[in-house]
Amino acid sequence: MAVSDWKPDRHSPIPLHKQIEEHLKEKIMRGEWTVGTKIPSQRALAKAFGVNRSTVVTALDELAAQGLLKGNSGGGTRVVNHTWNLLASTPPPDWGTYVKSGMHQPNLPTIQEINQAEYDPHIIRLGTGELAPDLLPAEHMQAIFQHLPKRTISLGYEQPKGDLFLREQLVKHLREIGIDTSPSSILIVSGGLQALQLISIGLLHRGSTVLLEKPSYLYSVRVFQSAGMKLLGVPLDKEGIQPAIVSRYKRQYHGALLYTIPSFHNPTGTLMTDLRRRELLKICTQERLPVIEDDVYRDLWLDAPPPPPLKACDQNGLVLYMGSMSKTLSPGLRIGWVVGPEPVIDRLADIKMQTDYGSSSLSQWAVAEWLASGLYAQHIQYVRKQLKLRREIALQALETHFREIAQWSKPQGGFYIWLKINVPVSIRDLFERALAEGILLNPGHLYDRQSTQYLRLSYAYAPLQDLEDSLARLADLIKSSRQDRI
View 1 (tube, rainbow, N blue to C red):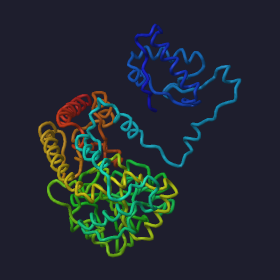
View 2 (view 1 turned 120 degrees about the horizontal axis):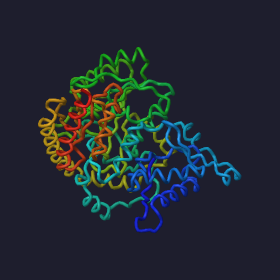
View 3 (view 1 turned 30 degrees about the horizontal axis):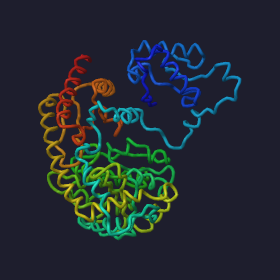
View 4 (view 1 turned 120 degrees about the vertical axis):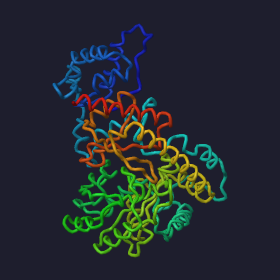
């Protein structure tokens, strides 16, 4: 649960604990904290309010004495609202029951913690999967929006499949990487995550089995699980997912489709070789196994362009191809696309119209202008240059500080280094200790339950000096954790 930005007034004659007591009481009385709500811990409240823990304890004791809160051993403190005044009134709805019965599963607890911590301006985000603010083209974006285009900007809803001009520009963009398609076979979506959600509810039966790399980013989100799907991991090697195992799992577990990130895989950074891509597509064709190709990192190559996408060699309409501007241009635009057989795109477009009636018209117009003007090509060259510098700094820091305690591979593109810690350490304890020192980590178990000794490191977000310093501090934390366990 998030804590508000409110803080007590230290210049007020009212004692701090009374101010906190009244603030929390208001949240209960206004219905923000309903019956059964588990409130934040004493430590979290003290940190949020900028006071000593004892001050918070005094305020909570007062609220407990008034019958508004009740603490359970090991279960935290919850709202009970057992005051005579409230008992005499109509009982409020038990929103907790509604929340628990919702169809969409909640984020993993660690993901929820990460999502909250990312907005702390003092946190160094060592695993964040997005470009640093100084790599985003703010000035060019302002110029794009200030530019008066020859065509009229639509302030209304777009066509079900998205702005036609944008889809025409994407046809040209995709042709450069070997994908021949038409505007009618492209659906504009609000980022890759929405594409997956549309696929999960629009194309698959409840109870279907989705094959994917192990580890995989898809384990860290609940899109398919919330739609009643099961995820089944297929091992990776240095060349990518292993086609023979895909074939065996398809038959043994009746896999409905395969989800893969062949270019600069999240979280491992693996680049699937050209030969492996062809083998995989051949196997999936023989097994009649549809493929979702998530290619959002493709443009972020650092040493050499990646092999052609699976979709470029797809002669049977087997592959649904996903791309996005979130990783390269701006996550705030929320623009991505799906390329596939026209009947499938028609189906997904219909589902999308039922959910949000189309992605932002202004964002679609902006992305189309970026592509048509040539600015995107210029921008991505700059981003590659900066990411290559950041990668080298991160690798040097790892060589200096982690040589004896971890192992890793040099990524050829994308954002991530998949770090395996070779000394026994509790990743949960490391996560909490690092967070206490202002370093936010992405533990490996978010992407595979068995990856308990891994971290997903990103060299794309943290300022360069912070990147170096935080890696040195992280190494010290790991070494001290190892000593504590001895």
